[in-house]
Image (cartoon, rainbow, N blue to C red; front, side):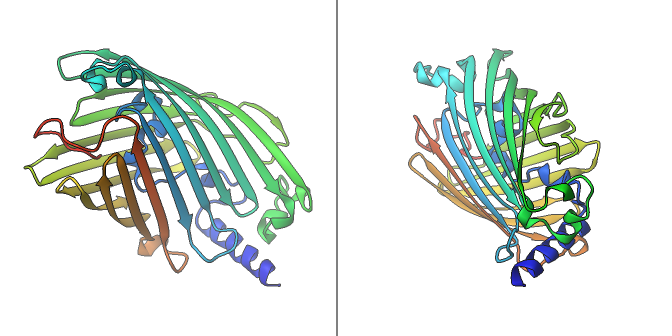
Length: 322
């Protein structure tokens, strides 16, 4: 009975939150610290911060069975850095990344593998034009034993009650970006082909292409203080447009604090620190009053490990985080 109550409650929450039983909205992956994972959202930004291993864990609505949980791990390799270029971020020409993401929500589990490649063209002494492309493979598993009441009544997925089903999708991502050591602006598209290359059971209504614009600016104000501001706009035809903003202050090149806001949806508080080649961060996100549906908030832990260079300024003007 408790299990039934948990899943029924979760189903009602998804419905009210605009996810509906077609589940398209939950396929939009939110990351409060989106500025630390630029290359996942836009392949052109692969290697922008050099060769780095990154990861995050995002736990939504903790304590409720079937609540969304997301796990991410990626490795980026900048070939200019690997070759020992004096300034690989500017002089390097190629970068490659492998990204793994798992998203769990209710009766569904998504596993995604994306391989991105980026090439750079030097425009001026301090600017690069970056072009990127990526191939993604996504496997979605449906546990028919965990369907909510609303999902069980849906004609598309209700037929899978009591069984396990799988759907596999192959698609492509593209992007371009103008980058500088202290600022960037980029445009990318996920799922260019709209999820039309797939096999297995078709229990979801496709994956429309999503357009994304990211931009950021950072600056060291003095030896002890640096600031970074980032924005992220997303547009998809079957979902509302989303705008996210965050602002961080880095102190003594060791500790940062920040705030973020997803317009009309949620606000978050951020804290993190740098040590050697390691960067750790924590975010607590809470819904706005007009979209509040559950007690508690969202916890997000992030990690980034530089493979070659430590988190140290090479010039007085350099800022170390986005």
